[in-house]
Length: 364
Ligand SMILES: *Cc1c(COP(=O)(O)O)cnc(C)c1O
Image 1 (spheres, rainbow, N blue to C red):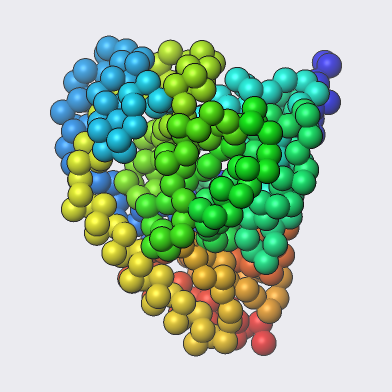
Image 2 (image 1 turned 90 degrees about the horizontal axis):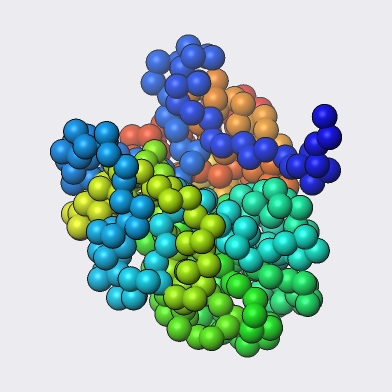
C-alpha cells in the first residue's frame, strides 16, 4: 500500500484519559477527571431538557443550515447571520479552514506549545506547519509575523492559549494585524474566552469587518456551556470567508441534538454564571493549594492552569492516575515538568491537592 508521506508523519492526538477507561483498567470506582477542561457542573440543565424533548425527532435529518442556532448566535453576539458557520465542535472548523484556504506548497503558522489540532489539520493536507515557540509562556505574535512569507495562508492564534492559559492584548493583536499581508487568514481560537477577566483581551468578533487580514473567531459549546460530548462550535468571519467555509462543510455536520442543546444553552444564563463563578473562585483555591505544596504555577485566564513540578511530569501523572485522579501531563507538548489541571468541583480540587501532596512526599 502506498501511504502518503505526509500522513505517515502525523502523530495522533492523545485526548485526556476517559473516566470509564480508568475504571476498567485500574478498577478505580470513582475517578476524578481534571484533564480536558470540561465543565465540572455537568451540562446546562436547559440544554438537557431541550434535548429530551427533541429525542423523538431524530428520525429526521437535522437542519443543514442550522437556522435557529445561527439566528440565536447572531442576536446574542450581534453579528450578521451569514457570518456564522457551525461546526461539529470547533475542531471541525479548524479542518474547514485548512481545507478551504490551503493547498500543496502553502504553509500555516502555529505557536508551540498550543492546541495540537492546528498542526494535525494542516499535516493531513500535506501543508507545511511553521511552529513558533512561546515567549515566557505567551503567544509571541512578533515572532509569528516574522515567519510569514508569500505562501503563508493561515495563522492560528489560540487566545487564551491552551495549555498555558495566557492571553494576548488588543494592542498586540492590532499591531500584529498591521504587520502581516492582508490576504492571510488569522484564526482566533477563543474556546476559553468566556472565562477571561482581563479587559485587555480582544474579542475576535470585533475584527471581522476589516477587509484583511481576515479574522475567523472560533467559539465552542464544549467548555463554558458544558456540552463537550455533543460536539458543537461555531466560527464568525466576514461573509465572503464564511461562504468559503460553508462550501467545504458536510451538509449535516452538526447533529440535531447538538443544535437543539446549544440553542437552549445560550439562554441558560444561570448555568453560565454559575460556571464562571465556580471557575474563578476555585482557581484561587487551587492556586493557594499549589503554593502550600511549595510549587509554582502559570496564572491563567481560563478553566485550567499549568503547575511546575520539581520532577518529570510523566511520573507524577502516572502516580496520580493510580490514586484515581486524571490530569494532563504536558510532556507531549514539550513541557516535561508541567502538569495541566482543569478546575473541578470544590471536592475534586481538594482531593487533587491531597493526592498531589501524597505523590510529592512519596517522591522525596
Ligand atoms: C477545548 C478546545 C477547543 C474546543 O474544541 P471543540 O471541538 O469545540 O470541543 C478548541 N480549541 C482549544 C484550544 C481547546 O482547548
